[in-house]
Length: 415
Image 1 (cartoon, rainbow, N blue to C red):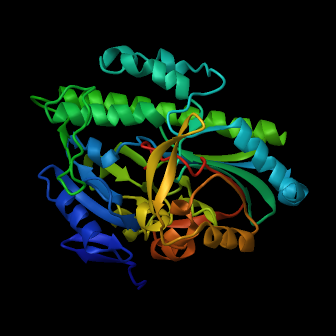
Image 2: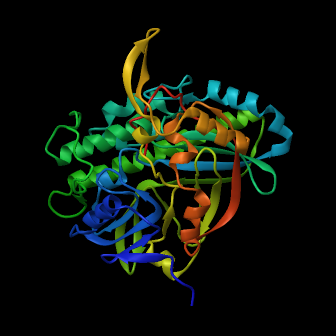
Image 3: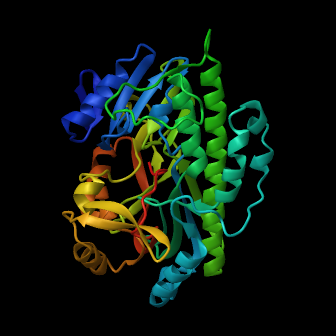
């Protein structure tokens, strides 16, 4: 009999080793009366109300704080018609072109207006809070945030060049999340959130019975943000394919901050995955590592552990160091007419340490800061080893070029 890879923490299946704060968050989430099940993935760490890497299944309810501020954050990966060896010598020029073409950063608008039929979706009218966000959404469609969001070029084990993109629903999703959390707390949709504690209980909205209108509106808005995130990743990946002069021969695309209506143990449940990837048998998804580590394309498998994990798996490597600990403390200053961040306290990770790691791995980096250095993440192969009975790896992707936002910005939309 195969040894299981998880252990039970107060009845909650937990993969990997975690600190008390992360375990405390999933325990608190699982204690809500609407909860039918919960699980914690091996890449988990503390988040807002619910841990990143947490999975919680609700009966006739959904949690906007569980889904999080970056609704529908996820990854798209595309195998191209180009051999990686054919562009290796031009990698520096390619990442320069990507960095100058794709729009990165906080609050940035697209340099090219993107027409998409999602803007004809009746949800913009049916959920009255959304129409005021439509202009923002149109302006930012096809832009990439900061933090851990990226556009990468990879080599797979067969030598093909891949394009990968990781980001979510940008300012639109953030405003949806903060707006519904405001409404649930009795504030106006557009109110400035008062900065609730990360350790407060999850906000849970009923989806049936009296008082369920707010939850139903949230689900509609969440699905619209999901369409928006997919459209944005499609646009950015196509931009990179155009730069390469390549076509797609294989694609994989998935969310990892979302709520899905699914059947588990004979019940219809709303499964909230925050920094966790759906892994139903046969379902394929992309999982990202750090800028100096592999990423993978995986396929869910049928097993007892899969059912125990609510058919979920990891979404990345998982942080082991906070942004402030890694990069130090910063403050906003005005320099040359721009608002930029100035470091006022050094962190544990220097840029020299980060660049030395990337040099050894032969990775070209544009942008990024030490709060995203490989040093602040677990190694993805170590995390994957905890989930070998929930999914299998189809493609292993070695990073060749990584493009992120510049190191003078922080992104409120990151997951």
